[in-house]
Image (tube, rainbow, N blue to C red; front, top):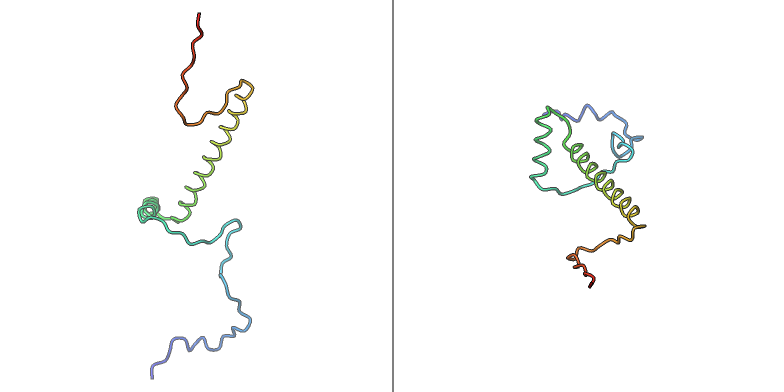
Length: 106
């Protein structure tokens, strides 16, 4: 009869073992499941290959963080400009076409 490979582990006591991840996650990170386009995954995996190694998930995370920071910076600049222009009575316009100006009669 063939000896099963797992036989050598029969003596191990698992009574105090805990279920869960072997490596604790980094603080501030959450494991999720996300669906991305194949083209996106291919792009980031190719970046890692050209760099000679690394983690494509880290590159995706960095790209998303850069986008978030860029957007928040843009929003801060817009708010500052609005606050500076407010004393001059320049109101925020909608996306409508500009209104024609009236000329005074002489």
